[in-house]
Length: 135
Image 1 (spheres, rainbow, N blue to C red):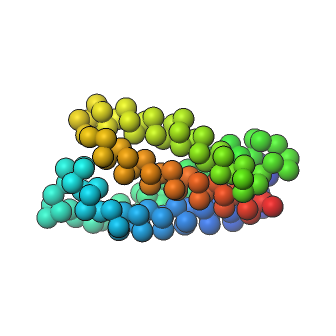
Image 2: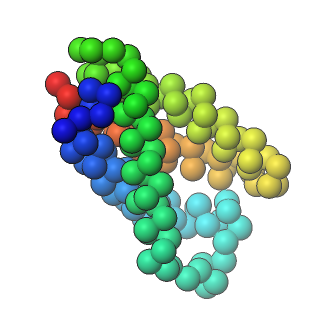
């Protein structure tokens, strides 16, 4: 099964990879992230809905990235083109959105950098996986 020349299985694998990357990344940088986001660790309450929201949003992200990559045309859905597309989506939409929102919300650049690198890693992995599943 495919969507715009891209495998649905690839989309699902990309979604799971994005979720795992987020878990590992914020598992390592959780302390600095909480400080940058002005979150008191004693006040945090981890709800299953947070994880459900993350996986649903990452599924939508992978599906839309697959659509963008699929629009490159027949034979162009490759790991390299997936990486390039993931980078362009990150730079043009994700990094800029984070920068604008964090400035208006009064957060420092440390939060933008931490979150920005996370989403860069996610989009690069998703793009490469989506491209790999179509090769």
